[in-house]
Amino acid sequence: MNRHPERSAKRAVEGPPHLLLLLLVLLALLPMTLRAQKPAHGVAVTVNEAAHRVDITIDGAPFTSYLWQTNQRKPILYPLLAPDGTTLTRGNPPLPGERTDHPHHAGLWFNYSNVNNIDYWNNSDAIKPEARARYGSIDHDRIVSSSSGPTSGSLVTESTWYPSSDVPSVGSNQQPPILRQTTHYVFSRLTIDGHPARAIDMTLTLTALQTAVFHDDKDGMLGIRVAHFLESATAKPETLRDANGIATPVSAPTAGATGVYRTSEGKVGDAAWGTRAKWCELSATTADGKAETIAVLDHSGNPNSPTYWHARDYGLFAVNPLGAHGFDPKTPALNFTIDKGASATFRYRILILSATVTPEALNLQSDTFNSK
Image (cartoon, rainbow, N blue to C red; front, side):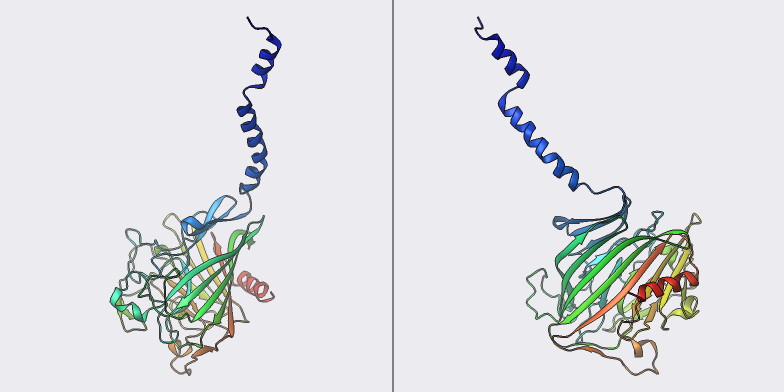
């Protein structure tokens, strides 16, 4: 016989004490969970240290990812996606039907082929272990900061240039480092000529831990390896050699390559290579008829500006201000030097549109970029 029916009824309503405690904890955590969710609108920069990546989305759609500890021996942005979702970079590794030359070309990267006689540009896991003493690695050290916002997001990273990759990196590389790199990325959503566009502003500061000589060479500095449809239809088979004299055959393009370069100085197609200009753009049409454009803007405050354009017909779109003699044999070798303890800063803006863009619009973008 229950002597206290009112107590039993009360317990039935309240439930066991441990369930009430769990409910209170969940209610307390709910606001934190809501705050942690990224907004569906705006530019979201999401860090995933365990997976060695930072993902950038715009209005919930993928844009690019910052990746480190890759087989490329350097941090990269990969892939690059246009506002309509088209992938503008070659696969990493190359997809079926894509060119397989130059395995060190992946996404978007920043390095150089000859710093103190060490090659950073051509390094990847394709280099045989016995040859790696001639190739440097750029090791990601840490993420300094990241932020998201309604129209832009930012990411600041630090990395170190080591003169040899013959031993594993990530703290175990015993070679004295040459450079420390701080990179500030700003990822933005904007409109150009009435078309939705995406932008990446990159400010890269190199501080010399020992005197660093960037010996004059064509292979550098900021590079993008583009998707097949952005290659030039006029590309011819050839054999290219890197700073170490290693030959790489490049085949002729297959059907579907429609890319055309154009610079601020009016150079078009193959004529853009090795010339100087404040911007260069590459436009093409996909197999289903969509226009896509990548434009890179050089900042007037960069060393040796306006830059040379290492704009190759087989799909390498690169900016190299330091290869003066490499592009123009009549020009003396630059051999740009950063003394120990000194720094040099390079600034670039990469614009991506699912449309063609006028020279006037790019000049306006260039003026705005250079005013900062």
